[in-house]
Length: 210
Image 1 (cartoon, rainbow, N blue to C red):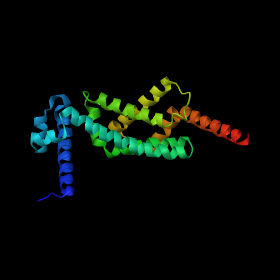
Image 2 (tube, rainbow, N blue to C red):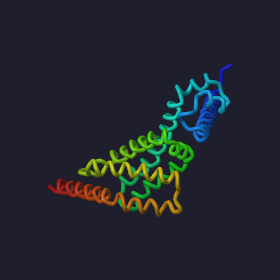
Image 3 (cartoon, rainbow, N blue to C red):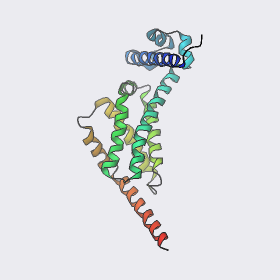
Image 4 (tube, one colour):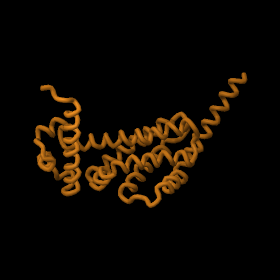
């Protein structure tokens, strides 16, 4: 009898969730370096063969969870960034990008919290967030021509730093925090983007009049 594809897909989803939940619980209990695949499978109540159908080892499991987190983060914040690009760079509009990023993080807060709390893997997660932050800047590189690599590095590290702080400590007023972060740390970049865009629009008008 042929299996229903939806039934198989649902079974895979449930299996991966069981593995993921067991993995997170064990990291909190023992720390990433001290857990084994055997312990993960026992806690998830699956066979080792089932585990190896999806992951090569615990490092592969960790990296694939992180990749899922980064895809969600990039999609949610990137979607808002594209909306801003189509309109105007302002303190409020850029703050909305930061808020979208934090909303995406909040949806997977438990994974972020567990990984950030383990010193053996927190640095890897930070590097992955840095990569995403740099991709965000690359999306607007035409709008921020002339910005130095020093400024880019500062912005990237600030983004990952504020995500870490938000995950571990939260915020009483997320809207206000996003506004303050944008005003203090991104105001110069916003001005560069607006001036660059205004300059290009002026050049286009002058060419059109020739």
